[in-house]
Image (cartoon, rainbow, N blue to C red; front, top):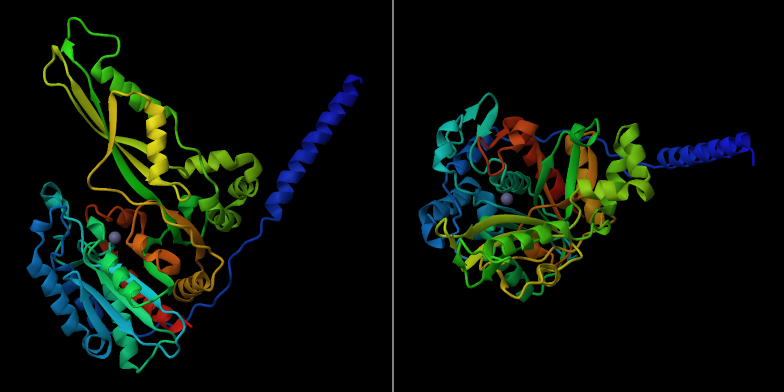
Length: 477
Ligand SMILES: [Zn+2]
């Protein structure tokens, strides 16, 4: 073959290759459904005041249950009962675990019920950062159109916006198509055992199987973060699991003037390095629908990357951290500079990918560390398994997509793997599908408020959240 022929064949191959990539990109069709924005319902102005009042209750969850301010929690429940008189008097109400509210609103049909859930406990505000808040964290003060307070985003917004929507609909004599449960948990930030956990036990005992559950999740974000010009609503269809292992090495120790080759700290360090170098495999299944939904909405070059997963999959999965992650978070060892310690330990936190289990993580650690002197024990705080993945191809997902678009207009809706945990870990056991989202449109700066400084929501976003729950309850068939 002469040089010209080789060059020509090469050129043909390149053209074919580029055409294939282009073809995949151009035929990468959007999965977005179209829904018209609906007219807003009139939310009473007093709704803002009620939200501010709710933010003022110090319903803080602490790891030490003895620190719980019971007056704040019971005060909050009393407040809800008086601020939402129709909800309190017309719906069946139960209080579980001391402070978790469960309302039952009987529907017109006996189709399987749905659960709408959020939590009103909040994380503490560390005193060192107190002076950096633009408005005090338990004030509910409004500055420049923003309502400030711990819980403004996580997750008193869900509780109060849902209650406003319920009260509004009850005042119009509305009755939902199917029975709806409304849960407002009091201990999500410390695991949810006595809140969401007891709701599920109660429903199980009564033979209730849910059509779907909706819980907190990601807020509506600026799509530019992922190369999309429109805002994006990420509906959590799954969440990662969680476990932490403490690795403790025990040796004879010794004098630092005569170290052995495999001394205490060095050996433990080797185990850490081994775990960091032997990462868990990346898995596409739990994020496949997310990539399929978001890809076609991106600008051309990004779309090309997402349309050609056969070539780009590993790069994208890495960017998404789409595997069980390994993060050493605490280390301890040694008492004096001239003593080789007899013990040292490290804590490693794993966020478990759906499809894998706590047992698999343990087996992996045992195999990779491979050192009989190192004991591997789970932290007493425990862990939880990754959730199953709910499909985006369900009536319930379509209902959420429809409601988002009717309320927020031109928004891209996509399934999403939530990296953090929610109380949905309980609901998945009795629900056909479980979804997670926070129906509030927030800016990048405000996003830092989740568990952070200056947690706040704009008055406009708060009112949209009320609209969302109102529309959702009306839309549920
Ligand atoms: Zn939360």
